[in-house]
Image (cartoon, rainbow, N blue to C red; front, side, top):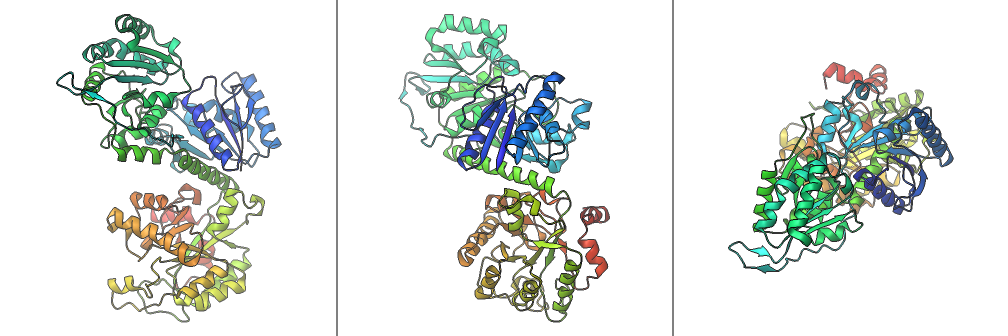
Length: 622
């Protein structure tokens, strides 16, 4: 994929580090990447173009728009990723009339004025770096929820983690390290500078007096912009405690400082990197003070980007120096490394490789939303018997009627594709110009024997392929879940492995439908995770295919099961009668349409229409 990042980089903020890290990660994966920014040079091997993105005069903005438009055409850019409102503004107008999607990452709260809500310049998809920011965009900016994806900053954690305990001394009733270091890491201007100034004046002196081996370091940029109160307090600390006050300023070796620091006060990327290195963190940002990050406080801390983002507008926040001093004192009396499980969780959730993959999926989603803006019908079939079945569930379409469905698709130039085909278009493996004008996805659940005897020949005659959702347990040979619920239901046999392989040979997509067809929301999380992940693993092992998509049995799902499906490595997941208005609204809950025994040309017309999902929501209120 060809990716162009546009960013304001008049100083090296967290958003710049984020963009550079993504560019490096995607470049290593073989994508072509360029950055357009205020900076003459950034630490990346990606192509760079200096552009005064931060300059807001309309004359310069028009020049920026012209340059970006030329870049997009010159390099045949597939997606533009903006990293500030100014970058989104110029990118939005540069892309007008071009079939190139815009993705914006929002790193902080947006100014709430009429134009913010009325004039949406953020593009097809918006990445919010934390949950509080997503809530702010939905509830205060009034942004469409379907546009917003929560993806955190990605961190290139050091592979080697040094967490060995340092030496203790017993010089007081409290066990203390022979030397201790508390570090403020981050920017020292704006609201963050105000917080540091308060702490330097009201908290740090008492801590340094109480702990004679304590060193306090100030690490980060814009130290010259520390408020006057902070500068005066710092000068007094240096006079009183000498070399125990370490004014480091900007450094390329933040990782090295983390490893020789015991307690970090910071927010955002600083907090993530410190926790990933096993160091204790007092999460303090522009919006909130979370306190010591522990397994119990981690979710709250992560939702606010470790103190930097509030979900709702609030009065100016100023930290309680007494509270920070209390929390720091409690830690310094019994210094320790964070729990290994928390450290590993942070390293997993904020891993640059993982985040880069999530961002790439957002790019693909934005491409398809622009290339295929209409609703794509996903039809759900089950049994294809020779004759009608005496069942109350009515989840069958006879062979004769199904042949009529296929004939209808042919007459109306409706083109069946699979999720694999769709992903090939999304990822750029196939040209978007070849995407069918009227796509449809035909899905078949459970893998009944009549799918082999009746369905497969009819589809082959028509030249179509579909998606077959199978159980991972190949020992399940009939619809035992139906009979367990109602013994009067007719038995329906499941295909053999050889019959399933015939669908693979015919080019069908194989999807997972759990191991044993349970209602996932009724299971304990560990059992549900096993049903989901094991079905993917078994199908891939037995049939020799990559399993890309998942079908929820009974359409039974909740946010927790969706998260488990995503964690298991699925790219798409189909529901039943629930989901977004567009496939890209939520790839983990794609709306599917039930197909019944007595579909007519009129119902086929309705169920394959681009307006059907909106009609269904209006009629059913869901």
